Image (tube, rainbow, N blue to C red; front, top):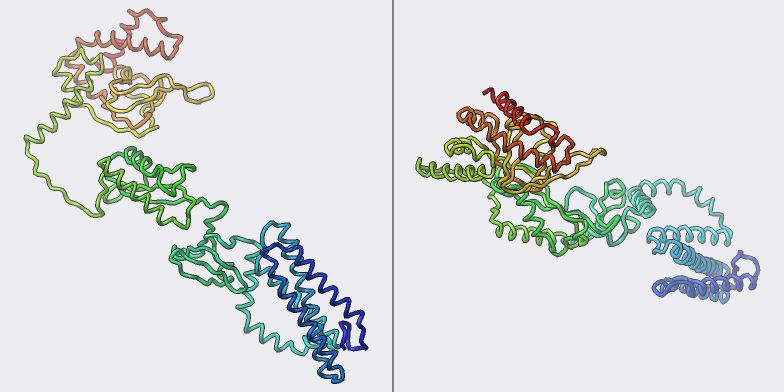
Length: 504
């Protein structure tokens, strides 16, 4: 019988060692592999049985040299293949798998096994007296032809190996490799030639590895399974952004699939033809059900806006034609004038004005709307306007030594500020910022000038009220200059400043 070492005389001790080695490696692999990997030992076992079969045939047909040579070759090949397969299982699945705590990539396992089979074939050829180098030399032309024919396949194989080594994704990850959103899918398999992706439409995509190696890949499962989603909605220009933001955030709170941390937020994105465009950003850990989650968010937003009487405008241009009579326009203007006059009644030093002057001042006032956090007036700013709060809250701030803001007061509906700037034009002594959305009635210096010019007799009374209010504010601000100057002198100086500022 041909032995493992060649074609010489029978050396059964060598055959026994070879078979014992194959059995030992197979038993060790069976013992060390996990329960799920134990079926992998069936292939080396089959190789070992085939080696025994062909070895037996070679011994029986020893009288026929040519037939015995063939069976001896097969015996040697399958015995070495059994040993090689067992070694691959031990090296890749046991050593590599336990050190990395993850299953080795299929392409890595296949490549290792292929290299082992090539080595086994060369050893077997050498054992039967054939020099592998001579075969490679004589088949150089054939190898070149085959290589050119298989260059795409080889490119995919090398790209697949590179993908497995770099691991930009793994089986189970959701990836996108094309700008078309329909190309988003979950990886189910990575083999030698291609990667299999199942899209949300349950369509199987077979993507060549060479294409994936060149394409920018978005992995929605890395570094975590949390991804940000965006939903857009258009709101009417008549509703303030703050009102819409609050309604949307309250609506999506608790929506299935929407995470509370990181918190969702709303961006006023654009001024559209039909209304203000809002983008709602939220996070979800259910990427597979992303379309369903987006739908839930849109449903919640629609219901919330309906309850808040914030109507989503139609994507169309509408021409409004109003047949407004002079009588109805007059009633509307009268209601607005009464509202402003009522707000101006909150300012104590304006109560000294006669009713007709007070009403004229209300007609000249303007309404301004400020967003949360927006600065209304800044410290050191020169301005001649009086601000009365009709709706909302403002914060009065002074800077600390470290330049941080120190809150000294909060003013709500019915309060006012900027009276000294209105009357004397002096610089602002504090920064006033909107705490939430605020609607203010603003009286300008020019509007108050005509009113004061017709009622110069009220200047003394106004100065007394202003001095009293200024003393209260200085006490709140803990000013060291409080009451250093006698009240009578301060009153004279203030009256002089008012007359000079208004050129009376």
